[in-house]
Length: 241
Image 1 (spheres, one colour):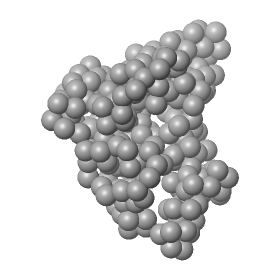
Image 2 (cartoon, rainbow, N blue to C red; image 1 turned 90 degrees about the vertical axis):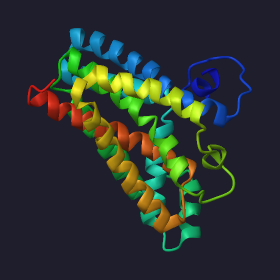
Image 3 (cartoon, rainbow, N blue to C red; image 1 turned 120 degrees about the horizontal axis):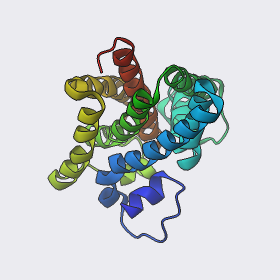
């Protein structure tokens, strides 16, 4: 868990020597920490500044706590997958630290949609969005890593392998209770919503670069988080929660 926190957030956890494969089962549990911090900041900001400001503060808090790790992956993936004419060129673009047009649009759209989905919600529904989105979203790279070849032999994506049965059980023991607590019998809807961008991203990455990279795994977190938030907002808007 310490290694997972150290890898996925900027929270100072001290030295840790566990490999990424050993830390991966705890990725969803890191989502509980990040989502909990976001709920606390949303609650304080909502009382002081109102719903829109609370949504902005909560989203920015998660970006700061994680060091924009997943947002960086989303932007690089958008630039790379749609910005080059060959697989090699696309991989080169994804390693370029500069932000391109596709990346800027993907990043801006993600942040704006997350704020828009949170703004009209009360505390209970905002907590559902923030906790379930960050927990289920962090299961996305585990699924992508299990189903996909690696587009390159180095980098963070190459370090994350397929979970063993014990690791999958640990991850599932976090994801399933959070989904059920957030939406009750609607929990399968959240999982299905999260899987849609995972499947689309996997297909695009396979076709355009031959597999996944660390950036693609990060994009999976961001897009699944957004999809879960949208699903909860729809359910809440129809008084189904």
